[in-house]
Image 1 (cartoon, rainbow, N blue to C red):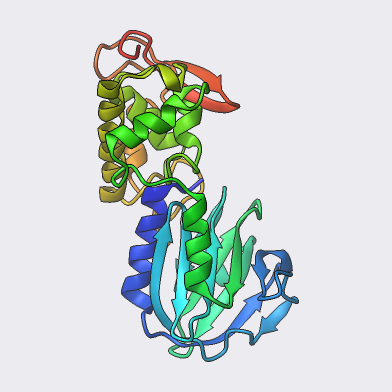
Image 2 (tube, one colour):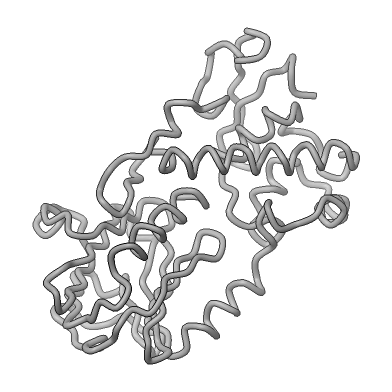
Length: 276
């Protein structure tokens, strides 16, 4: 699933290209993906529900994208597991799994591609309100939360620390990749109970999460699965994974073999020497 760095990379790129662009039509190839203002799937084929709308800004909350129109309407977007949002990569017009095509007056196009079809584009009559509702449901991002508040939230749960930091209502934007690498960088075993961490450990964890997320942003995200950026290009963070996906490889600190395990149904990696 695209995490904070991947979604933020796409947001920046779309913002660079599409501010003030006017929509002339939307081609809906899979109705359940593109949901209209009545919270129901839009009909198959070319749709004019967004004709004349002009993009004023593009924002992000956690892993959600919000395209704001000058009218006050907008699109709320979640890429979920396998969604891609690419601009002017015209091979996407004919490849399988392209679900929605948005065309602009200047002939540019956005393609929404998704193999598993868990993602969506929702038309919102009040995009600022829709963004506010989502923001209220999510926890703060690692750069925003202070250490004391982070500790307070973790002390309220008996879940593993890995499960806790993946809970978007507790901490927004962190997914399996950056949680795994952040925990290793902080020297914390992902199986530890969240409420056993001390303030010093929580501070180190928050800083470590910020570090790996910033590396993700700097490298354009992680393309270990289906993620590509808005230009259809792969990110590079997968080339420097700290532990994620590195089963049997040596720990970058001590050289001991990294172990694979499952926590909360998700793959996890740990150095049993360095993470306590």
